[in-house]
Image 1 (cartoon, rainbow, N blue to C red):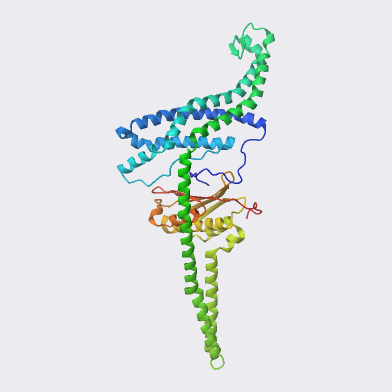
Image 2 (image 1 turned 90 degrees about the vertical axis):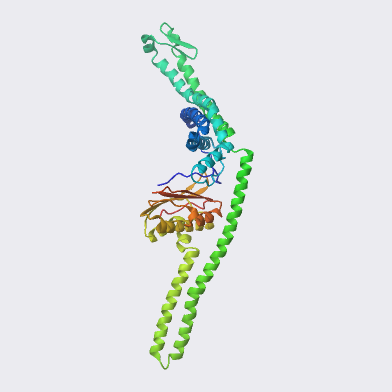
Length: 452
């Protein structure tokens, strides 16, 4: 199971050209892609009408309520076009939208949301693309779709020429007038022209699809100002996350020192004192010495248990030995909830990223057990070779309403993965389900050799 989540478009180091390598495959696929572009052009026509009507009714108040929904649809179509440009032609188009701020409650929040949408230049560039793509996208997609279909139609005309003549057809195919009374010598001309169009399709149709991807990038890519703003926000976020990482590391060192001082160290000191007392009593009071030795043995066992627990808290052995997928499965087995884990990782991330993802999963599972009132949890681990992202999605069937501002540990998870420029998205409507998606940019090591 997996859930969709918005994320920035990132080109990973293992990015490869998604296009079919053979011209034959490209020529066969391009007409189908052309029909998709025609469909998108139709959607854009409807979106232009919808958005202009919604913006026009803002002064009446109705537009304020409808603007977030119409804009969400427009951005979904634009993001679909970005994805197709990347998947079909390898043309990366980053999403230029400004980050969503926190809005007030009530009517003031509605007005703030509308101002945020209308002040974003990407909103207007999307609208311009919607309008122009009705013509550009429709034209390019239609020609890409028709080359192959029209060529096949010409061959069919030649094959059933006698039937068409008998039925009294009156039609044109290129420059050939297909009608009763035409000399039989013209019969195979449509097939010849259709064959030429089919051959032309293998060159022209992919070029038209490529032209549409590049045309889409013209309007839907971030402007220079938007790129600089995104870079500034990213630098600020990284600066904050690095500071959080230093603070978290210092707090972790203090925790380890406290655990050692109050736990294993205290037990070892007590064990040493017991052994000293047992040595003094060994000759004259062997029974008392025996009791002290038993007590010392118990203390050593407890100290060893605490040291092992401390080591697991620093870097679990199962994570080092078996990798992230099996370590998360071990967390699932230890959880009081019913947890299902689905993992598809072709390799292992770097050790720091792997550790951050593991402890993020541990914190999220703890949050679900403490606050969500859930019975079942689903965890999906995957790696996108095209985006270079390690993705972990955790879904629970609890009561929902999770909010990072309420101190449920979500902010800590966000800071932990933010150290590696990771992103966290949260969907938690009242009544559930709650879906938390973590995405961390990284590269994987050698492919896995075991499915265990």
